Length: 394
Image (cartoon, rainbow, N blue to C red):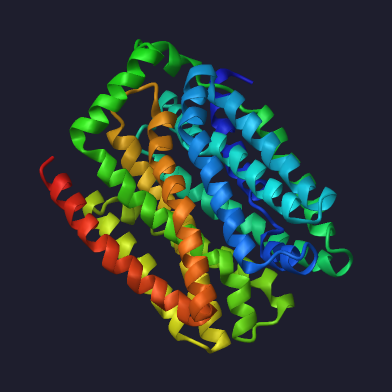
């Protein structure tokens, strides 16, 4: 196989690995840790905050190490950590096991975050398809969700056989993603064209971010990401509160996959929206849906709202990554630059889950959602106005 065909194979492997990298056991994690491990809702919030803190510490260093030592090596390490994370739930059925399962998974995800997008972007650049990232990334999400629908529908059903069975199956599923990464080839010619020194480039990157006042942008985007990631953490508890049966949880994620596939067709069009406008739409979407979720007590509407929200949340990052890759100040630190954005998501992720958990604990799961949505909008509307003003000056 010649070099160009190997690069084209990268894209096929990129599509395929998405099927196996998502957690098919996700729908039953909350139920498992509360029913089997005896963990309270408050402890779930603590685990989420610990996980976010670890992600915060590892996010930027993992991006920099990825740029310095190679994107493929970082992807393999990340996939390995995500694979072994599933064993923690099986080996330690307590707070420690649940915490380790989440922490190790998200350390692995930190090495994947930014790195995969940079790797694909460089592959496309070497193939002469510089402007195709949004199209390729949305296609990956579409194929991955289509293939993942069966897994997320069937794997939670194994919970009836044994509560640990979904995590054992998850181990082998993640292992498939690791194997697919092994067959990817590094786009070497692009690396040879880059003349910047990695160390000097890092300081150039920091200087440019400061000059552009992008810290505020990253902080704002991080807040929206943290809120979007926090809302589903109490989804299954919310479903139980409004009367959705447990056996239906896996099918909710499968239906979400179908909705996500439909959303992906809109990604190229969303990419055409000016970043400063898209970021505002994104912000309002998260806040308003939190309010809508909290105001309904009907199982059908509650499920529909969460499906739409989850479908959108899975494709929003494609648009944001595409915009950030277009504006990255350096050629050889794309993973580091994207990790800056992820860093602030992790930073806010330390506080947002605790805030949501406290609000839900105080007001109840339904009222807690709409109270959180209102607080979120009130606090971050002024920040968005600052972001909009700064981006209008460019």
